[in-house]
Length: 308
Image (cartoon, rainbow, N blue to C red; front, side, top):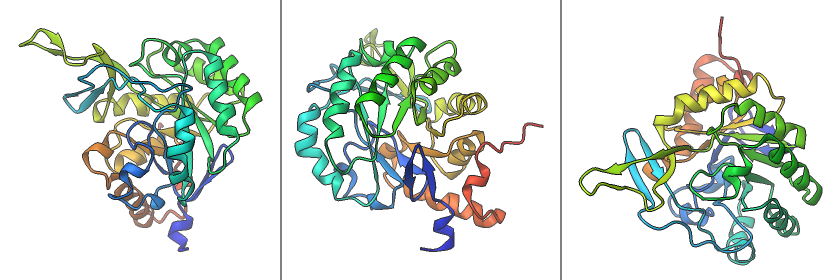
């Protein structure tokens, strides 16, 4: 491996990543869907679509609506359930030479525990991303993720039933996200994912109806990047956990903003729907930046935004 490739390695929550460029949950399916479009083994890691205890049909269509510089989605965590995931999705992921992070969610704390216990018996999984922040379902994680005491209790309970590192994905739809992050840290989280989508709505003025079947949904894409960068910077200064930054990353410069704000890795989401090659282009762009600036390792940049 070249020296420049070595310069991209990073360890987050006990997981060794070959590079800091991941793909975000919900935008990359279960890996196989994109495997004909890009070399998925070149990614630092794949965060899967959400897995729940029982199968979910998801929200009523329409499920997507474009907005200026963004995308509203209300998928509703559609997935086949944990048993089907283990039988039909995990075998493909186990063959890959990249880190596999399984995103999990539930309506009650016990749902998370059940999914975690089932996954804990399987090989080929490197960590869990705990989705306590989805704004397009009526119950469950969205409520859990806004209450510090519930977050602490959930994370602590999961730590008792799984051996995987836990990456807790937080919602920006709260008054004080630092308080939530600190609760996750106290509960034993190994890392944080920042941020999930912003809660939004769009209306078709001709029909005078919401553009989403669910009425509201999660806003992603470049429109939310300044909010996401601010939150990463804010949490980095107060919480002693590695951060995976996400929210509107379209190119290497966007990714570097998150790293300078305090992210130890980044995840590409909506951009995958625009250009599936984006994660690999971002990885190459970071390498080029390091070479141009004479920086030996990207980790030298983490949290090094010059405020003074």
